[in-house]
Image 1 (spheres, rainbow, N blue to C red):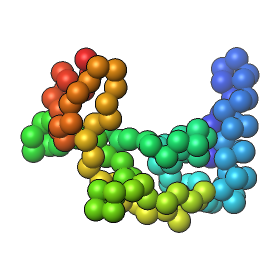
Image 2 (image 1 turned 45 degrees about the horizontal axis):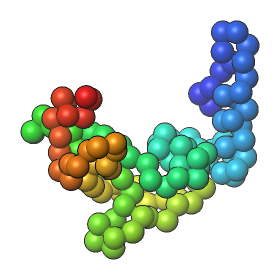
Image 3 (image 1 turned 90 degrees about the vertical axis):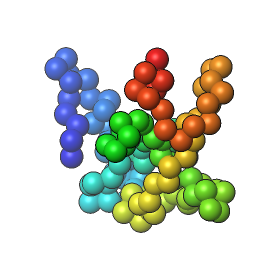
Length: 112
């Protein structure tokens, strides 16, 4: 759908996209999905995050398919259209020496 051979003729991205389409049940099943869904399928890791800027505060929030009400990750299906489309705001994952559990961070804090 979107991948093409590289300028030097490498086809691995095209093959990966085709394998993902087969795994999900056809090309029509992967149209319009999110890249975090694709990464989750390819890596087997459901902990995928999306960072969005809040236009009201100018700060960045972290979102995931982790339902804080139920304290669990939303179930994942192969086809992105069969999944829950909701993303919930979650604390930023801890990385390295980070101790922040804030829900929004400044641009400086996100990209340092």
